Length: 572
Image (cartoon, rainbow, N blue to C red; front, side, top):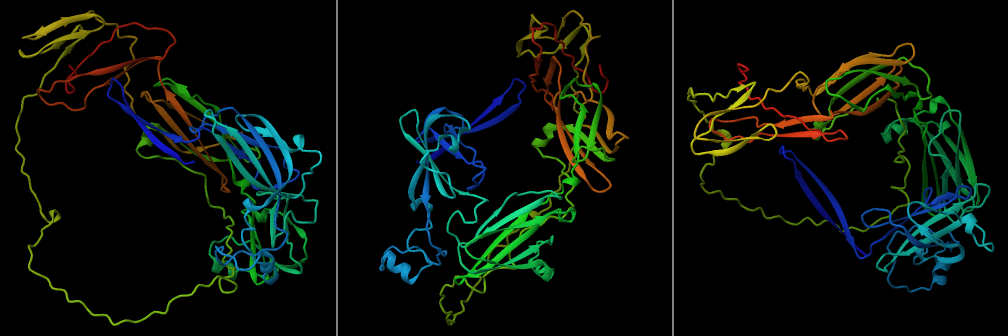
């Protein structure tokens, strides 16, 4: 059931000549529905945490599409013997029977025992048909068959539905359920490893559970608190106190780690052993975040929409990760967000505190129990040297070696003089051109053969605010400091461009706690005139001047528009 993606592109140009582009990917397939099973965690789930399983149905474009779905959960029969990973591919022809093979090779895979897809289905735990849309919840406890119990082991969940064309759609997920109160493993395995929480704070206890189905297993555990990615340096920093030794015998054991402030940045717990001529390594990272070095930046006074040229006064509050007052310094800046189309710009919090990176390179089986392939012996053959003969050719001279000097000729060409008056516009037309010019709303005049002045009534300009400040940067404040309440106040004047602005704030304290936050602000008016004049003209050019009037109010507006064309040197 392949799905083919088609890309549709569109370019839209407004009356000012501004073009915006967009695209969308349209998937096309043989089935018009997509079912997705979302487990609350990964495929290994605590039996106490298995509260519900969510299922979502979408069409191929990713839009939610309600459908009737049948959901079934089966328990699987996983292998009941220890199986080592293959060092070779699965054979296509079997000489020994499965029983004979296991008799001689009790810990090797015969065919496909390690593939969950080949495991036999046992008890039916859940069977329900219901409507599915977005994250529809199915709870095993609510719909479980009373003759079946949800115990440790492997399970498969199947969701089946039909699309609008009657084609069957199916999704399958495998997951393992374990019980922390049981001393047995959920399935037969050389090593089973589970960390209760991925992240913990100082003062808490991290719990790591390790188990095996093998007998008389000698386990070496190394607690690695080095904050380096260099495996050689990591090996030299190892101390005897970092190692502990345990014996496991077809059981599991929980290791507790009491976390302190010195553990921030995290540390590693490497567990390894040798069993049945194989080396096994379980590397775990217990992450203890630098939460005490995180600042929160909130805006007490802030407007996401304002008028161009408005006077603004904003208030920012900075607190620690627990909401406490802090003395901090803040860098703040705001600029035209449209510049990000050319070069995206942002800041980030300080990254100066060391973190643990799990590096298992010091421990491995590269020179012990590993895969070895045969290789051919290198034969040193006699090499006959080839003779190279060069013929005379033209000497190629690249353009980088040619220097061209252009000498300019100056001329005093007459400048085009266009003048506009308050009561009208002077328009010069040649004898070959004849056009209808519209001035204001409704006043039209046919021009031909000569220069004519079209008089219109003067417009009261006292209420018209001409925008002049088009700065791309609103402000750059590199050294703002908090007051006794942990607040920062600053004032500024918004430029008069009609656009979206990007505000960036970066704060830090003396002990290098930091935080970053950004906002966007839009400057606009209910009635806006946005002209789009060409930047360059030559004498004799014909110009088409376009302007766009934007009404953002909730009512229709009528009025007059006026065009003034001035000589920039004299402003006449």
